[in-house]
Image (cartoon, rainbow, N blue to C red):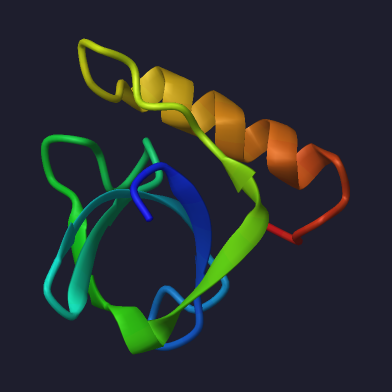
Length: 84
């Protein structure tokens, strides 16, 4: 599940696109590169996100970087898939 794009389906961040950084039990840690950075990921319950199956970001050896996450999400949104 790590590296997959996901959309929040519940909470004040509903509709926000994230990238899953880590999976721990029934929770995932997600980041969008802006308000939720790699240093401060958001903890979300798995049932409160919707995985975007067709896209996955490869995990770099040196770990995810905020700029790369931000750029990947922006490219996805510019394709017309999601309203920001």
